[in-house]
Length: 367
Image (cartoon, rainbow, N blue to C red; front, side, top):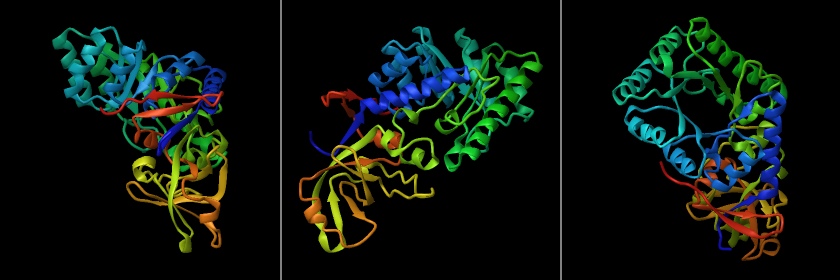
C-alpha cells in the first residue's frame, strides 16, 4: 500500500476490546464505549459483539452516522449548544434514543423550552466536575439542584470524566482518582435523589480510571474510548504496554542526513498529528515510537521532529549508520502519542487481519 497509511492490528484491537469489556463486567456496570477514538463502523460492531451497550459520541454527526447503522442508544457527551437542538430533535423523532448533556442552568433552560415548544421531552444528563479538569458542575454546588429542578422529567442522570487521570502514572494515584471520580459523581446523584428528583443513571469513565477502579458502587455505566487502540500516552500512564498498541502509521524512508543520523520519512505531522501528549510525561516520545515494518519497537529510534509531510527519525545516541540500516524505501511503523488525533488525520484505516490480509475500513470525519 501507499504511504503514509494508518494501520489497525485487528488481533490487538480485539484483545483490547475484550479486556475493557471484562473489566466492566467484573465491576458490575454496563460499558458504553466512546467512539470518538475510531469513528468506524467495524470497530463499533466489534465492541457491540463483545457486550457493549450503546455508544458515546462527541458530535451529532457521529450520532447520525451510527444511528443509520442501527445503533439506537446514543449518548452525546458534549454540553448541548442550543442551536443544535433541532438536529437532536430530528434524530429522536427518527427513533434514536439520544441522550443530551448540560452543565448550566442556561443550557437546561434552552433544552426544556425548546422541548416544550416542540412537544418533546429530551433525555438529559448533568455533567459533574469531579477533578477540575474541564466542564461540569461540582457535586456540592447549589446550582446542581437548580439545574436538576429545571430539567424535571427530562433528567435521567449524571455523568463525569476524570480527565486529570491523564497526568498520573502510578497505580496508587490512578486508583485514587478513579475512586474520586466514582465518589463525586455518586454524591451528585444522591443529592438529586434526596431532593425528590429522578436520577436513574450514573455514568463515569476514562480509560485510565476504568482500568484502575477498585469499586464502582453506585455507578450504572462506564465510558472509555482510547482503550480500543491505546497509545503512547496511555503507555506512559501505565495502563498498557507498547505491544498492546493496535494503531500505527506505516511510513517509507524517503531520504537521509547521514552526518546528523537523520532518517527522513514521508510521515510528518499531517500523518501523525501535532499532538505531543507525551512531552509532559515521564518519557517524551517526540512524534512517535518507530518500529520495524512488522511492528517490533526499534529501541531508541523516535520520530523526533515533523514538518507537514516530512518526519525526522533518529536514535538517541550518535554513530548509527542510518543509510545502511534503513536504506531508501525501507518501510517502518510509527506508534502514535494520541490514537484519536492520529486516526483523525486519515479518511480510512487499513485493518490488518490475523491472516495478514488487509481490509479498508472507512472513518467518519467532520462535525
